[in-house]
Image 1 (spheres, rainbow, N blue to C red):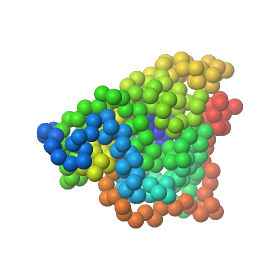
Image 2: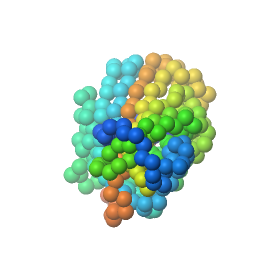
Image 3: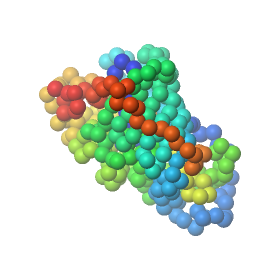
Image 4: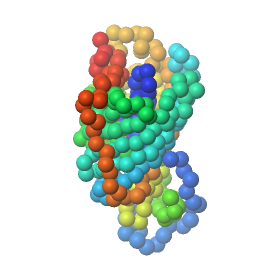
Length: 302
């Protein structure tokens, strides 16, 4: 899956993943606890069940951080870091947050966001009008491309070689730490969160294994999830889906072949069961944002 990031002045396909998190800051790898509901479960089963257990809590706060770098771009190498925090209602499938982006090349002011289903609303902090972005032609899920709940679906692609590392502390609570690998082929085939034949599916199928970690509390809920993603433009350009999209644009094909992207994403979930007041903005205060991405075969493309 991808995390697609909207930035002022346009929209950019940030890279293959799966939106959001705080980098590892947990305690040491002590020996696993010998008691509790997770003690007798296989590690892979714990990892795959954790998303549903997390959603069953009803709501939570989240905090994320994402670093993204690219080389081989016509405009030169670049890197930026995005972070944010907010609340999410897993039952109503709506959330909000405040996002900041550190980008030396393209400074971006802090953004307020609201997300529901496949729709993202964003505005510069302090502004009154919102911009609306619909990602329905890229993703295929009733949960939504940008919300913290959807990021949990990356765990549907966890391979069978999950390893329990030990116990750790996340925000002062004891958790179990698991080393995981997300198989992009398995994710593309089984997750049901991407549109068949689209660029998100192409990115997954062209990508390599995604190493990561998931930290699960004693109730079985995800407390922190981390994943690293590397994508080769040459592999992506060679995929059937992307080849069909770019067949009539050799310049885009060449640009894509030379690109290599690296992303590190992490997200924390905490304060489960809190009230969430997020709601879609009043339509009279909403403008339609640019199509994402504007290439042949996609919304806004020729």
